[in-house]
Length: 386
Image (cartoon, rainbow, N blue to C red; front, side, top):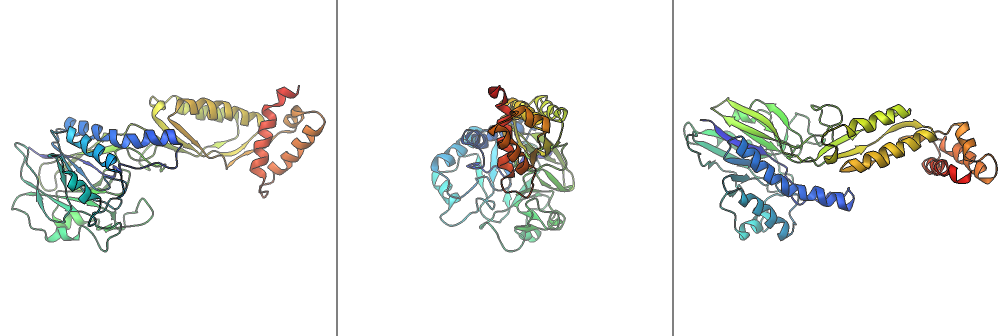
């Protein structure tokens, strides 16, 4: 019978999502707790009696007691599973810090906090071979050297499977965040004789090697397209169900755990048909109500096109998604002469429209965006002038 566990990381419980509107931020923050229940369900479905959380369980070290109590209560409720927690760079283990606060509260019977870099025997489920966990907790946001280096010489019982648990960036592999903080050797699993190395820090699932994986965050939390996904979908929202029959025999299955589906789209728009296609594409998705979309359109629209964008995207699509985050800085408005004439055939309004159009067409003008918005408002109000 193989050793089974669910590998996850970067739960970042307590994250505030300050970049989102207050109502949306509250929903996203609450999901950091609800995903604990889905992780428990995924572990049970995989026949795994334990979960390995590879760092950044919490988003910071100054969280309220209420936040900590809620998290521990969710874990304790899954009494049939064992949670193995590791401090990461967002929640490092420091004297008098977060993890000592948690310890003073009293750990639930099914929660293990790994605060020291030393081998820890895993409680074996019936029929499982013996296994030892080699955790690499972080004591600071940035630590010198490779936090997994000690694993090479770590002594474990003869024949026991060695499983590493760490948080950091695999050196030379291309750090997701653009920097390699707490660098980890890409061949650590081979050098340390690990049957599996469960990593955290990068928020999308990545296979570094057959025995070395990043699980990614179980609930998406940022607008960064997953290069292995189709189109505009961002990374995260999965965990890894792992079964190990022996050294070099890890079987890894991706399982979905996220509720919200994050997308980042940067379409070029010029025609009404392109606007309609964009709206229809997301509205047709079965999970439309759980989509969080950052839309960064580029191109130039006529006033009529800009009105259609408002109707189909800003009002129609936004009403159906969980949240639509719009960045319109790259979307120009280029009114046609006939549209300007339709605003007002004569008088001060027409003069103003002509001046606004001249400013809007000047990319060097610091008032270009303001002029575009004013033109759109005039266009939308044209019926009132008739």
